[in-house]
Length: 211
Image (cartoon, rainbow, N blue to C red; front, side):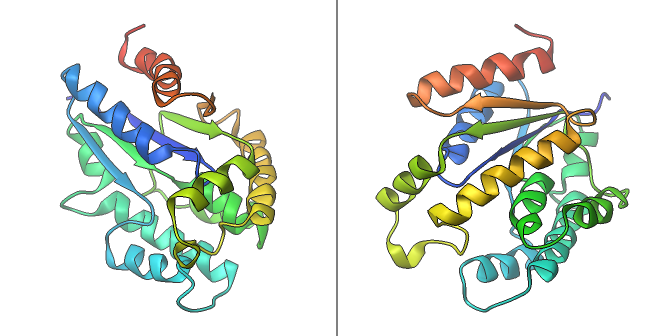
């Protein structure tokens, strides 16, 4: 059986990744594909710990955070029940909300990006995506969307305009470093939900031999 396709959504918080991921999964299922969706941090014990950290329940080091994301990512790949590698071997389409690019961008702002990349790419149990969709939007618009949908006490530690601006710049450095290795497509996230969905389909369908 041919291995499945691995698609990753990336972007700043507030760009609509979760909505667009769901729409893409629905569209692929309607075309007859078996689709597995997941998000980072995972629902595994390592991911649950990270969610508490991102919620600001306790302080920590960005170096430790980067290492924790690596541990969670490995577990998410190799989990025997719902691991990414298992689904890819079954021929499923795997769609993930965030992946190692986010570690290089978010934790990379406070650590050393080359160190984080060496740590990740030195691990053979981390799958490389077939396609990464980076949803683009001005940080100020992202923050406005986040604040419109959540209470102040529900914001995560990275969800400030200053932090998101720094992360946006870091994402640019990440993709510059990986553009010859990974298949990365920028998607303009401004517009209606349907308009953005159509831009995503135009990027994804050739992966499945369709136009």
